Amino acid sequence: HLFTIPPHRAFADALADGLLARFGDDALGLARGTVLVPNNRAKRAIQEAFVRASGGGLLLPRLVAVGDPELDEAVFEAVPDDKPVPPAVDPLQRRMILARLILESGAQADAAEAVRLAGDLASTLDQLLIEEVPPRALKDLDLGDLSTHWERSLALFEVVLKRWPVELERLGRIDLAERRTRLLAKVAKRWRDAPPAGFVCAAGITASAPAIARLLRVVAEMPKGMVVLPGLSTGIDEREWNLLGPHDPDPATGRRRRAMETHPQFQLKLLLARMGVNRTEFAEWQGGSAHDAPAARSRTIETAMAPPELTRAWSGLGEAERRLDGVRALEAAT
Image (cartoon, rainbow, N blue to C red; front, side, top):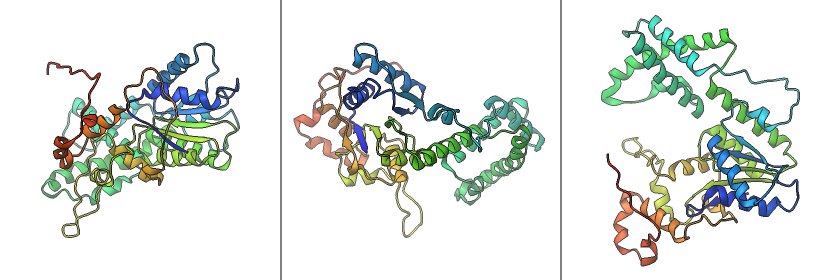
């Protein structure tokens, strides 16, 4: 059950309209369901969209942000849990402890610099935890001319990482990123073993973390599960899609061509790959609102975001693909 809402439609309003059409006939149809959203801001936007679409009183589905530190409690009813996920360490407390470990490691840094380095170290650690990459994998990176500088940085990183797990054990806590990964895995397993009676809709989630991809795959396969992605380009050809990357290593050099990680479709492509699905499996979500732009806008956006290798084709575009009705240019001081 895979869907996408094209970029010319107001996502939250289209989602609410579609869910009302599917489950609104039953007074409790929506209330029995769960909608997973990327964050609390999306949660508020969808709540407001339901209010606009209903025009009156409405029992809303349970709206849950996938990054919620208490995701299991937000999704499941209160039931005994024989394997609770440990609480997360406070981010500020973690930074202060990491700063202390940096100073104790003999690094040439004052307190202010140690706090700054601790912030960078924490961000790196979080990214590794989210991507489920063991920190030891950093030693295998080939950075060429930067190898000497990298070795010094890695030495500090290793010293701290050896002591950080000890600090966590002393506190009886885990990293927040690790907690989120465990909670996502817990929810995925629970739903795989026993799908909920009501519908589950994962809406607007574009993060490509492996744990999120696995959860979305479970949702898509549930009898009443739906995954609704925003603005997935199903109309561009395979050549353009493949240009986004990630690319295979060059047979001669072994190096990979850099992927277009800043392209708005790249994270969606990575998410689909980790879910094990193809973009051709996605259908257009049935739902819309008065806030939608003309349908031609979606094609215009796809054309504007074409990889550099394909921009020379702009000169041959037809009038329909050049149309920018309703779009205004805004010049801002830099």
